[in-house]
Length: 397
Image 1 (spheres, rainbow, N blue to C red):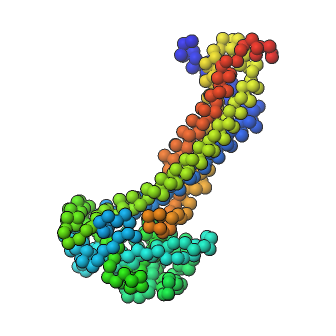
Image 2 (cartoon, one colour; image 1 turned 90 degrees about the vertical axis):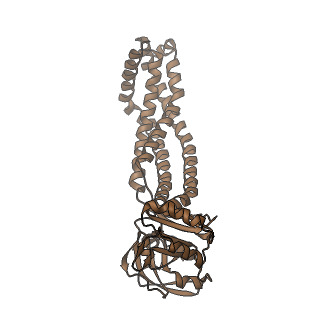
Image 3 (cartoon, helix red, strand yellow; image 1 turned 30 degrees about the vertical axis):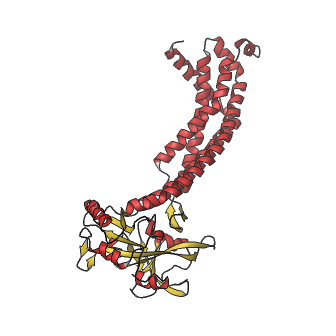
C-alpha cells in the first residue's frame, strides 16, 4: 500500500475512533486516570530532587570560594589552624576593605532542635561566623539585628525559622548547656544558608572545645578570574595543606548523593506504577477493539488495510495516555511547584530546606513517559485489530 494512502486511512480511522470515545467513556477514563497518577507522581518526586539540587547549586557567587583542609569531603571533616587561616587571609587574590580581608573563618556544628511540623528532634546546622561573613556571603538581615560579637546571640535563616520551633526574633534558644538569644532573621535568597543559624565563631568555638581552630574559610575574590591564581598559591604553599573550591561548586558536589537517591527512588516508583498503567491501557484498548469488531470488519471490506487499523489503535492509546499525562503534569505543577520542604544533607548530616521545582524539562519528560506507556499498552490490541479475520468479523454483522 502506498505510504500516503496508509497515512490517509490511518487518520480517517483514528478520527472515527475518537468520535466513538463517549460510548466507551468508562474504560477510557480508567486509562486516563491511571496515566495521570503515574505522571503526577513521577513529576512530583523528581521536582523534589530538582528543588534540592537547585538550592545547593545556586548557593554562592562566582567570586566566592571555600578553603578547607586538603582531603576533606565536607566542612565536617575539615580542620584549619590559625596559621592556615592567616595564610588564606593574607593571599593577595582575596578582596579587601578598609577593615581588612573579606575572609570569614567559620565553624559548622549540628545541634538538636524541634521540628515545627512533627514535634520530633532534627539536626539543625549552627554556623559560627565572623562579622565579615555578611560581606562575603549573599545574605541580608530582614528582621531584628545582627548578633553582637562576644555574646550568646544568633540570627536565623528564613527556611530555618519556618522549619524549627522557638526561632522567632526575641525568643531564647537552648543549645547544650547554654542559652542563646535569637536577635535577628536573615534571607539568603533560597540558598543553603537559609537553613542555618549563625552566631559568633569566637563564642561557639570554646563551647565545642575548638579553641582558635576553624573548619573552613569563606572568602571573596578580587575578581572571579583570580580563582586559579589563589588555588595555585594555596595548594602549593608548603606551610599548609589546603584545598580551594568555588562555593557554588562545593555545594553542587554536596547535592549529588541526595539528588541521585531521590531520582533513583522516583524512577523506580514510576516504573512500578507504569506497569499498572500499561495493563490499564491494554485492557482499555482490548475492550475498544472488541466493541468495534463490526466497524473494523466493515472498514477492511471497504479496502482499508491492516496497517492503518493498527496505527489507529496505537494513536488512540497514545492520545488517551497523553491526556492522562497532561492532567498529571498539570496537577503536579499546581500542587507541588514551590512547595516548601526539608531533607537531610547526608554530607553534612544537617537538614536543608528547599522548594520543589517543577521545571519544563520535568513536564516534558512526564509527557514523553506517558506516550511511551501508551504505545506499549496499545501495541498488542493494535496487532490483534490488524490481524482480525475479515470473514469472521463479518459474520457478526
